[in-house]
Amino acid sequence: MDENTRVFVISMAAELAGMHPQTLRQYDRLGLVSPDRTPGRSRRYSMRDVAKLREIAELGAEGVSLEGIRRILRLEDHVRTLESRLRELESALADELLNRPGRRVFAAGPAGEVISMRAGTRTRRSNQIVIWRPLDLRPANDDT
Image 1: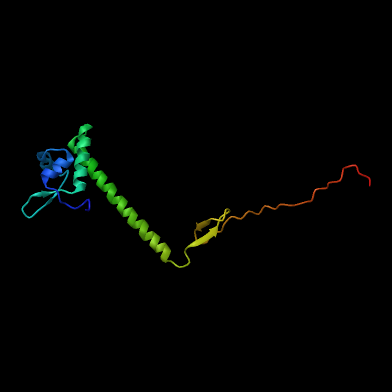
Image 2 (image 1 turned 90 degrees about the horizontal axis):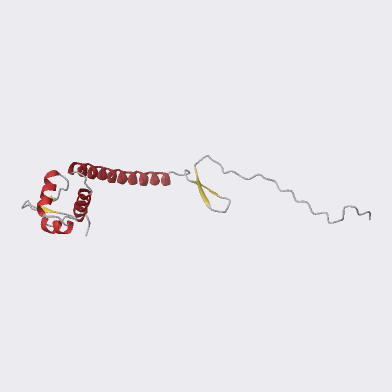
């Protein structure tokens, strides 16, 4: 069952949220939780609605006013919307970058790992020179 599927009647949703059904009706009137309506006008709640009702109860127990709760819920919904949009844009950007020929450039790192690079950039190479000289094992004052 999807968390957004509206299947619970008001009495079941109230029981799951630990509230009285009249409280759910009040929250509906205030716009804190807006359940779907059946053709007969009865309310249907989802698991997401029940979770929101529990959050409202927690915030109320912490002393947050109903108006404060409304603002918090609105901001949380806005953040969820923005996060969803961000994921969409990131996915679209990744698809665009993958579909551009010649736009993906890779190089090998110092430990052999693959490094993704921007097109037109070069890796930094170590240009240190090591000079090897054999050790002179003769004693310093040897006249032979």
